[in-house]
Length: 146
Length: 146
Image (tube, rainbow over all chains, first blue to last red; front, side):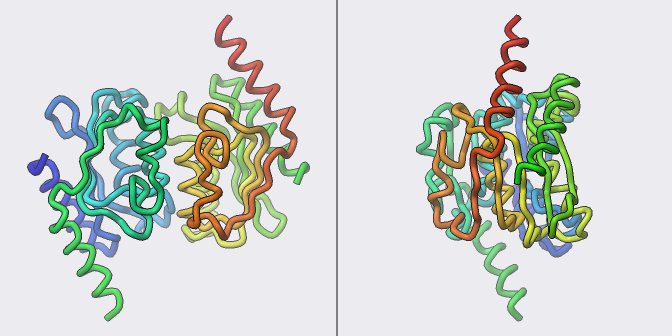
């Protein structure tokens, strides 16, 4: 899992360089990365352009199927409500994430969607390379306040 | 409210004609419809192309701003988790919807996100032209089973 999360962290770092909240995401199927994304909310002025949403849509384009069966989503930050809903709608099987998000995290921080019966078929692995993701976000928001 | 919901129902009917789950949505700002959409999941093979998601993104393009302050989202069906998250992320002020959705509705049917503190700044009006929306969905799913 760490190998893929390293790639997601690289995407998050690139997002940071262009002024986005540093979050990176990938979709992996049968050991192959089929989609990559970082946040694009600011550069595209799109409120739904979170890394997870873009990775999910790119994976659907790659598979020519909106049902992402047997796919794992890796993301450096705990998903928000919208992204958790997209994970559900796209039939993502496994979710792996880095740091928790106290302000918007919808797996367990702000809402506990993972306890909802709707999510009972998803495996969730939190805390993978958590510190690296936290440090990246902390530096980003610290620099914004400068 | 009914006037705008009639337009959303027209969009839903058009979606049905092209094989989509019949849901229509609009974004209204200061009495003007600034974005319209119906579901496009099947025709675009995109798991996140719900009517609400598309209407929100089109409104952001129109306003050249991802923050949809003072905007109302009209949608014929109770939004799912993903769409409720997008409503929150886009800073939608008011949500008006038609029928409830027992299988995926995230306002109050399957999860009660409207009770979450994250949603305390949104006004929610359910049940507007509820019967028309229900009838449309019922016919659609009935025909699918034929």
